[in-house]
Image (cartoon, rainbow, N blue to C red):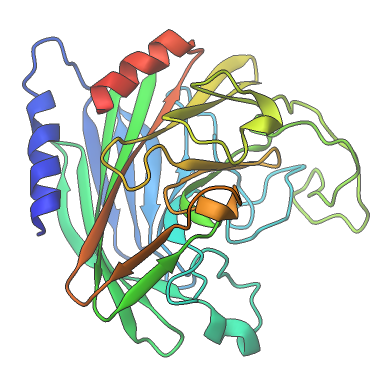
Length: 339
C-alpha cells in the first residue's frame, strides 16, 4: 500500500474516535458470482460496487437515498421509463480519464466498434485489498490497460462509506502509479463522474430519444419533462447550466423526487492537483469533477499536463454527499470536515 493511502487512511480513522461523530453501521456483502459488493448503511442498501467483466471500468451502481430512491440513472444496465439513452459509458459513479497516452478511458463502452477499440483504454479489476465494515472501507486494485492488455498504470483505490442521520457519504481516494512513462493531457472527459436519475436533469427544451413506459427505446423523439426539476449551484453562487466548466470547492445538484427533496454534492479536496477542479456538470445528467480538465473547459488557463515516469504516482481525493435539502452553510460545514 502506498504512503499516500496510509496517511489519508490514518486521518479518516481518527474521525471514528472523535466524540459526537456518530456513524450508521456499514455492511458489505460480497457476491462473487455476480461480481458485486452490496453496501448497506443503517440497515438499508446504499449502493453496490460492481466489477462485471463486460464493463470497461468498475463503478458504484445503483446509488440510493436512505428512503430507497434511486439517484443514479438505470440505463443501460436496468432501464427505467422515460430515461435518456445517450452516453452508454455513463454508469453509476466511476473514476477515469479521457486522455492517458492519447487513449480514451472515459468514453469506452459496448457501443464502441471493434475497429475503433485501439483508441480506447480499459480498467481491469485485479482484486480487493480490504473490506472493513467497522471503518466502512472498501479498497481494491486495478490495471489501466490498452487494447492489447499492456498495463500503463496501476491503481490503488478505496471507497469510504458512511451515514449520519439522513445523510449518506462516499469518499474516494485514488492513487495512480505509472508502469511506463505516462502522460495525462487536459481533457474535459473526467474524472470522478456520476450519471444521475431523470429527476435531477434539467427539463428538455426540445424532443429527445427516450425510453418508453416499459423501458424500451422509442423510435421517435419525444418531449417529456414529468418529474424533471434538477438545479445545479456551486460555492460561488453560480447556478443552472452556467455551472459547467467553472472551478469550485463544491457543486450541489438539488431536485424533488416523489415528494422528497434530495441534494447531491460533489466536493473537491484541497490536496488534489489543480484544486479547485473543473465541473463537467451537464443538464442532461452528467455530474463530474475533473482536476485535469484545464483548457478542455477554459482556453484561457495554462496548459494542464501530468507526466509520470515509471514508479511515479499521482493521487486524488473526492467526496459525494447524498442528503435532503441542504443550504450553502450546511454544505460548507461538510467541506470544512473534508479539508
